[in-house]
Image 1: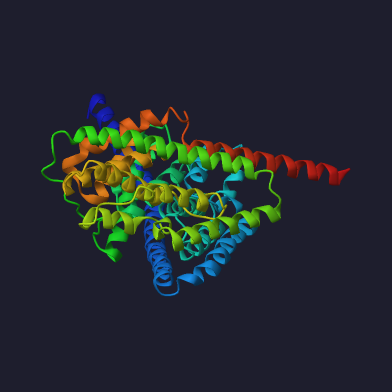
Image 2: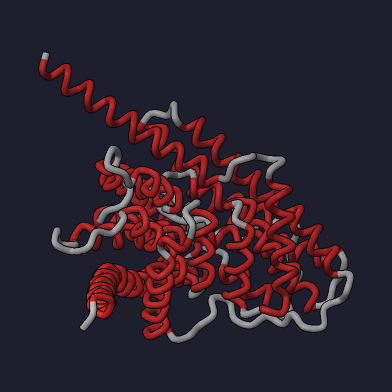
Length: 459
């Protein structure tokens, strides 16, 4: 055997060994993602069923013992706020800004702050608080909370990895968890992937594409195994659309982009106003929000209550597609009142419901056909969600997947892009960006206060 043959043989064996070691390392790195995805799917299923049960209790009370809501809603709103305030302050609200903040803080210097945002305690408090709000008729969703829950699950699994195991980026683990959570909540795998790229990170997807794809698939399949291959909203009829309907889509996108951004701007103003509140004033504010919602539900319209999913189904799948002018106003008002209480609950589903009502209202102005009305309803959903999140592609893909309306993808993308541009006239930054910055600043202030307390104790 000559020297060239020996060298080739040595290189072949070396490359084969390196390849096998790399495959082994990749497989070992994938296992934690698979485990976390399975856990996320199971928790998302249980949460979905509990949330649906909570909303059914509200519906029962509304139709059989509606006056009880004057007592039940304030008590449950207070309980939902109190449990968050006492046990996990950063479990309040949607959960998406907390995940975004956790991604930014997942570095050696700031990683000790992440447990405030993502933990087992946060999961428990998030679920209990949001369920209490849902039973009380709160205009909240479970999708944002599911994302924070999933991020907490993935982070915890990452902590369980032995030291001998191949290392996994904390940041990528949390991002992947958020994508898996959204996919399981809405049964929208593409939406989960696009959401991770568009909202959560600027990192190129090639660095964690295998992890995010496998996580979304496993969590989604787990949800489908128990719930079936359901669509979040079913199959609306969007065939035989008029050529001029694009003009209606543009008009609805402008309205919903402005409405979504204005709603978020109002909530930020209220949060700033509440900073000076005493404990007693915070409690009074929660009670006032609950009583306003119940009073409106009793004497004006019950559409202010709940996540808005029932309203979306009614508008899309029944012959009754006409709504009164104040329904969109009540949907937005319900979201503002509930989200600013400080209890847990998301704005994804309520934003979709508000956008759907705005689209139906515009269609009613021009007496459009049912199919043309449906596309304006879907465009309104995309537009208002974009106004809140500033993620036009995620919004379009989510609505596309939850209704299987692939033939109107261009209508939905147009609505998202226009709403995104229009919303800039209200605020250059998204609602979640503002809240993320607030959470990071709050954690820094708490850390500084703790350090000062220790210094004083030493003196």
